[in-house]
Image (cartoon, rainbow, N blue to C red; front, side):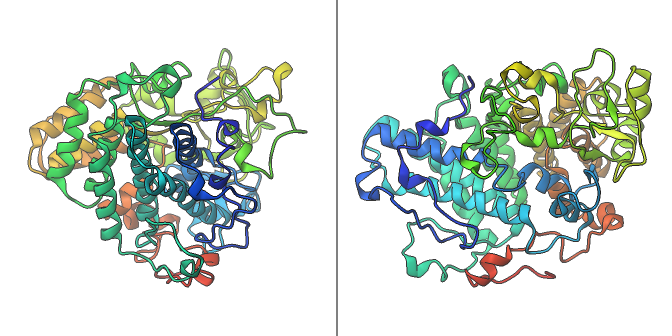
Length: 510
């Protein structure tokens, strides 16, 4: 079984399992029947269980409803359409795709909430574990990285957000305002700088702890936060530390990086594990108990629409529920770049499906442009045999949050912005070489546009394109035809529940 921090190992920390109902705000942390917090967190066992609980929120992609961070960040881009069975199928995902989302969107609420749940759990360890042993010091450092990650997601997607670092009293639940994004980033920087010297390198992890954050994870995240703030030299310094560490390398291909064998492989910097070993069936899947879900149910959601799809001869990509369908614009970008091998591993056309012996019986279905994504595909090799459960419900595909290829491309951008075009080309061309493309030799704006294109192609369907376009000031030009409105859609709306209950100011335009 994968080291996916099973919930049965953390349930002893009753105080960690938030009892927050749908009608409560994000700061309301009522926990009926909890053990006194002051009596917990005292031992290494307690501290370890509490830390694993903080990791656990990274898996929470189905929360009494569909709330995937990956889709929340992908659907507003120009990579894919929402898809599904029609405009009423998961309307919150349809709204993100069409830029008609509002403050009551289900996925917006749940991704916001899960990040705060994760930060809350990290805070408990940071504030309550004494740090008197080397293990406890490491666990506190891990939770500082996790808190930094959760807040980096919140700041990137929502801008100014409440920054909660202490254990709040009930009277403070509705009196904690939004913190300027710059201050949130400053705290993230502080957490990561304090964690880096304490954390082990990746090669020091045992097989059962590969999901845990490392020095390279923290350095990569710190570099990314600097990059998002346009602190170019500081970003380049952190990425360089990762590059020269010798702890990471590119897999032979994108397909290898996303294969079962590639999970936690040499390209993995930060990865969320899921398992295909729970033997879920339609009768026992915990649809209403998100804390018990250990499989990656969104993989089935993103498979090609099964009632129309027949897979290619020898292929293992099975049908699914037809969400996150590829756009012609992305496919054409691969073709224009002469990017053949990587395209086949990322997105393919109906024509290619038919040439390979497959079929898509009705290409006129809702939101389908004739292209299918493979990166997070519903491959039969990632789920169970029918005798061991319902394959639809047991996908064990891991989520890649930071890949080494992303680090190299962020480094290329940081070096370019800092005036070191030679180093920028070096890091960019490493990724291009893996894709069997020639080296980029140009400089100036042409070099920057090459980096932009490489990120579009290499990181397609991984949740980066929308945020990249926003921070580059390219979103209006690239997404305007899809409904993007400047001075509004650069940020998501604050969930309505917390505008009302938490008295938070809403983002502009919502």
